[in-house]
Image (cartoon, rainbow, N blue to C red):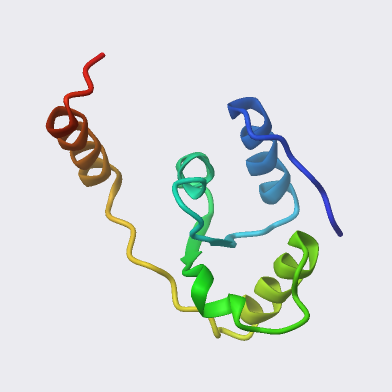
Length: 108
């Protein structure tokens, strides 16, 4: 089943509800830039999110669309073939972000 969700917080909360409704305890997603962060933040606590390095799965020929990529990731996840990237706990991520803001001179 393919279902699309938007990128805003309300949409991501609908994604979380849909995953829980369909008994999906684990999610795999590509680590493309920082785009995974909002999704991970919404799913954290309710679903296990495995962050996969895009370079490790991009080399497979014939998987060029988002839907094909998601099906490929699903198959790899079901067979236990995905190694997730390290994601620090929430508090450490928050401290890192604050230190980056201060270091880069970005203030609120």
